Amino acid sequence: MFRALPWCFFSSRDGSGSPFWRYALISSLLFGLIHWENGAHEVVSTFMLGFVACVLYVKINNIWPLIGAHFVTDVRSFW
Image (cartoon, rainbow, N blue to C red; front, side):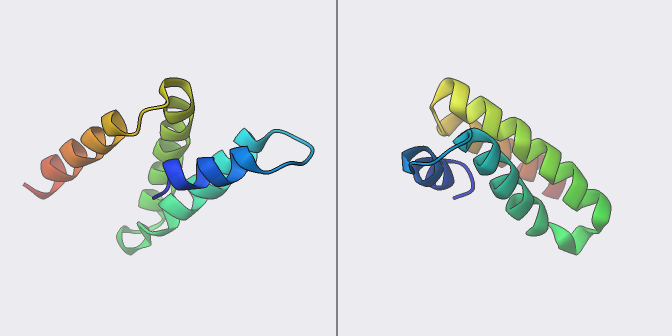
């Protein structure tokens, strides 16, 4: 939801500038903000992780490794 769909939207739009930076900043910010319940440190860390995930997604063009990594992170933190 925060990687593939926004990338499809931003990469298909015409306009000046790089669609990657808008995509990465907006989707990372939204990803960070949905983790607000754990405090500001969580928002900042998930924003940075989201930005790295954007870079990886654009490079490998495959969402499944990122889904797997998020799953492992959630299992590890909630177990």
